[in-house]
Length: 231
Image 1 (cartoon, rainbow, N blue to C red):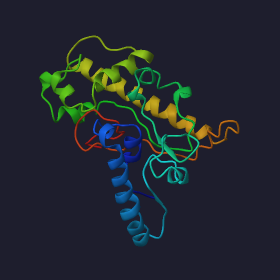
Image 2: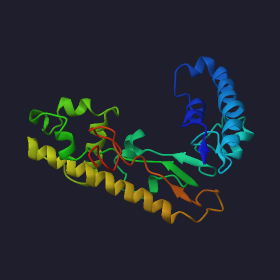
Image 3: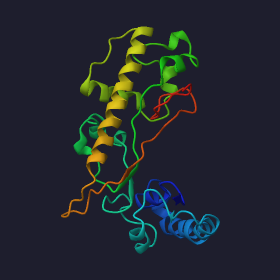
Image 4: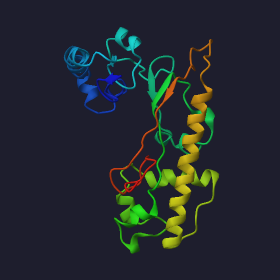
């Protein structure tokens, strides 16, 4: 399947940028001109082997009915959704609780932050950076806002944070972050596998696909990947 863009429909519908509030109609018009009127026919002509969707997440035909910018592009009754527990502090600490996850048709993005292996991160840092609490250098390599706190909140809700210290305690927090991440992905993924029945009252469920974000890092840093930079 080819997608015109990633999260642009959702961003416009949910006012992710301050400029949208004053130029909303311009953004909507340009969106349709670029992705629907320009890109869509070209992609369908060049690749006849698979369908084209205007965005991800999107409601598919339901989005088209709404003029290509759906009010709720993450409606679990249609299309696909992106879901990250780190966007909500309550969800972020309860990631091992399957009931927080969306009963969607296809969750095409989800994931959890962890630290890379010690072998990987140590190759890009100095010994003085290997401490717990996390050093400023390690925090600098964390590009998700307040990411290290999100990791620790999740660990603390289910496990026990290490005491203050040097290299050994740094290795401890790395290991605990891997447990927290893997259990979270396991919990959410298993929910989607069980959720293949449809709820006839709400139209939710009938989950037929899930893609977690992401597989591999492009540098030595905390991220949502399963494989660090060195594999």
